[in-house]
Length: 87
Image (cartoon, rainbow, N blue to C red; front, side, top):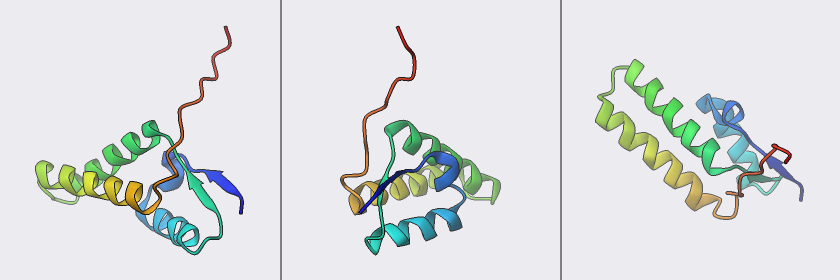
């Protein structure tokens, strides 16, 4: 099985994320992401829900739950950040 690094623009919007994670759940590939990617995704999801009229507190809770569910379902997907800066 191959692994693919998914960044925030791949995991958001929701429909694309759902399709890609469904493929991963079927074992077609192993998704990888960083803590930063999940933080950016959480923020994007929160802002989307607020724009749709959800209260900020509820929007944040829903976004936090999304990230928690992703971490639980794919518990080996979070990888360390890789620095691209050369000394």
